Length: 375
Image (cartoon, rainbow, N blue to C red; front, side, top):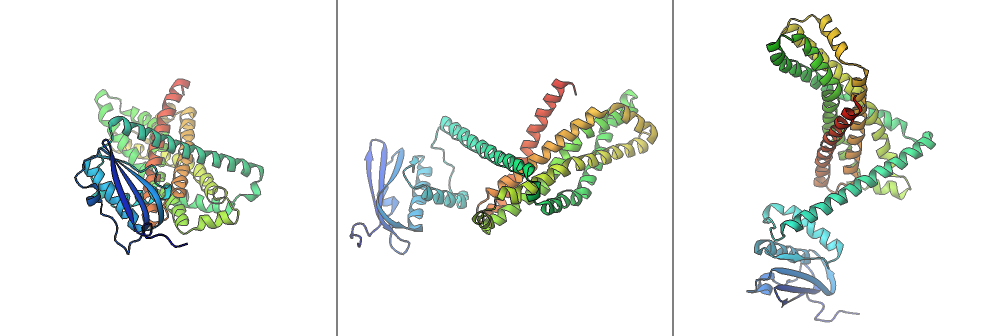
């Protein structure tokens, strides 16, 4: 049945209720036809709140989005609150994408008070925590399925990822570990030389490398190298609709793509951390022998006396946790990426930031926990 002439045309009406302006949209919105002007619609009124509703809205395209974006910019400039809660979720999502794409040209919205901003931030944080918890739960269930049926695990993919995030990372991890050891030894030498305790450089370098710097620096390197690679790979697969194809064939993305990567990086991170520890201690040895004239044998014996098995185990436990965090962050952000090139880039950046933030939080928790246990 053809639409009536009143409905077939883009329509926008406004009426005031107190200090609020109620805007009602309807009709057919097409980019090839003229759309109502927001400036003429608002006229000389100065509302503190604008509420948008839909009534007899037929078809719409980008013309409606441009009108809503114009309303949003006016509200931000006029410091008026915009209530778009009655718009369809898809329309609000598209409006958010336009706002993000044009974010540099939109003034900062200061219409909401401090309590509203804090409340929205709390809700956003809670939603992100729920997403992470849900993803961790899915990975846990996938691990249980792997334990029950190891034959279905993608061992070839896991070995390939172990080579990429393990063997291929040896040069950069070794270089950073050696330089960190050199830096720590030089820093300790400046302080300890004043007290005639040059030999204790071995204690300082050994303990700091094994307990903190080795696992932490390895985790940060892998977060920027491997975590970003995981996010980029899965994000590109999502943009190319490969993940949708897996789901269509009944293949779980968690089992097929995420779990091999998680297992690979969790196994490789402690090995890389031990490798970084070794080269860091060697770097301290070079400084001790060259700058402080300490014999290598004396340095080695002093380091062994200061570093015991509990220190080594604490570093390995940290590195295992760091590997899991990096894998989870990279895979989660990759699966959450938008289906575009810019979405993949944002997911990669978010994966690195999330991984480093969680690494520092986990390291602080372990520091308190180990101190309570006397380790």
